[in-house]
Amino acid sequence: MATSAARSEVFTMVISTAEYAFQAANEQIFAKKNSLIFFLNLSLLNYSN
Image (tube, rainbow, N blue to C red; front, top):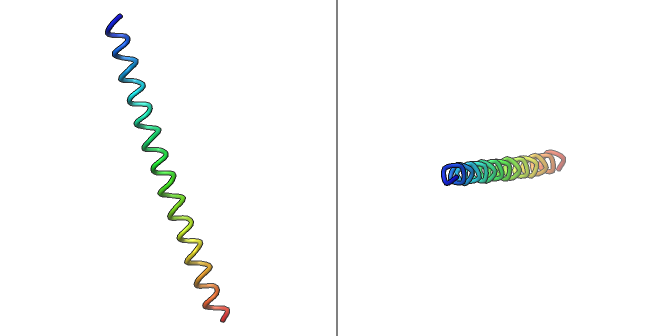
């Protein structure tokens, strides 16, 4: 019983770590996408003027 409880605890830890890493990667991608859009808009404004 103790081994299965420990196993499920480790499994939960691995899952939460993976979720955290996935969320961090998504936030990084989102930030890069936003900065890319910002620079594109900036260059378009400079080009139109």
